[in-house]
Length: 145
Image (cartoon, rainbow, N blue to C red; front, side, top):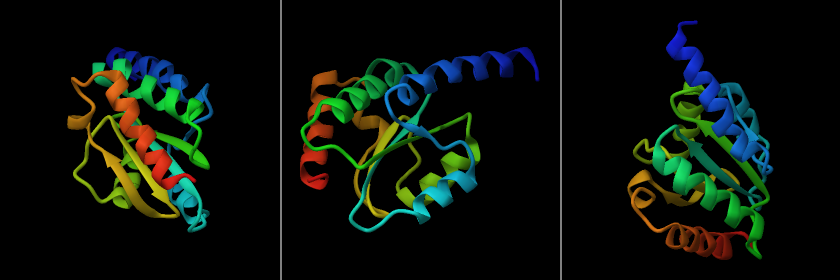
């Protein structure tokens, strides 16, 4: 592994832990994503964070995701994450379930394996964190009761 790849892996490990230390399961292979999604019942909700090394992931996406997933009255049954640029096959497989234009960071909310809410990067980047959190809260309130 060259120095750049080693640095990015170390950086990603720290960024991934911001989610995993707050109850998100990290899906790091295509098989892990497929197995996870195949186990979902139609009434279960899953919140997916497609993580990224960019500034809007660090300053907005991860903090908003953690805060709302922990503090909102209505919460998803499960919280998972894939890391774009790091877990490439896992991210690609998750995006097959999402069926939206690839975007990272982004949020997806599933009911079973059906996508019920999606927040792409362009609705994260440059926003006020409170507005972003309110969007997630509304999605959870609608779909996680």
